[in-house]
Image 1 (tube, rainbow, N blue to C red):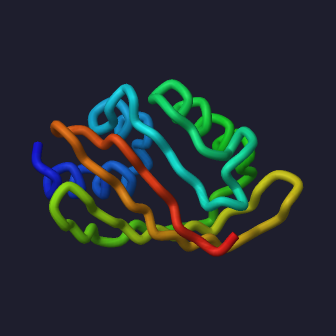
Image 2 (cartoon, rainbow, N blue to C red):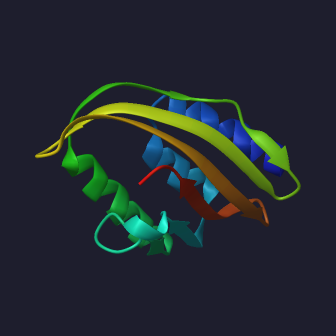
Length: 122
């Protein structure tokens, strides 16, 4: 798949809530996940390698008490990069309800996502 096809597939799967399938189909084994600097450490911080990214996703899911809604925007593609705006209305365990908005940036190499980076107000 080329970058446009990967971007479109990621958006479709995220809209369906099929996050494990996103990892199975689209991510390279050595992919890296990068958070904002204030959030880079800890169990929900930066992750390197698909197993670490999956573990982070699992930890995130376990921290969520309830999902009230969210959205996944259209991808914008430039060369081997694409971005997708996403939002989430969620109640986190012990933290209450919050509205989250972020820009997700992805890098593609050899038909797989090798880097994802999230931009949001921390």
